Image (cartoon, rainbow, N blue to C red):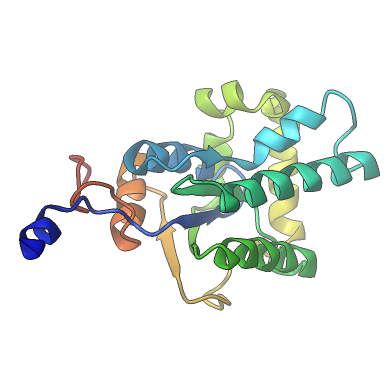
Length: 211
């Protein structure tokens, strides 16, 4: 009887923080939305905090930075301590900025203290592809600060030249997947992530027709 029950139990993946990162306009939010649809994990993309503060304080000012940092801290910490199955978080990670690594380590520790795990997914695509994606309908609808496309493009190009936005194969944590999504549909990238890290609910098998 006990064996029969074990065979019919619903597959429940371990509570997981999915840290989805890469350079601007690589498709983090779009892939995150597809991954949320597949797995049931809520998506907290980076711009939810940014866009909430921008109408009051200009980008990069001390009040803006403090509020955005607190916003992210609170959401991630509450998610770790909640009964949510996990969370998808997106971020542009500058590997040459020590503060970025410290932020990652801090949030990873919060989730692990609650018995959860953190997995990391790096998306990469060439600059010319990302410049095209920078003006996509979904990006502009979800991120009002990107609607001045010329200014947004200028910031994108400047970020590429100012920071190291590619891990270059030297990644500090083992639970890691790198995806070149230049020619990969967001749904296909999401499925790769879900299968690789065992995030699919139900029987744990693939549930979409993505290839």
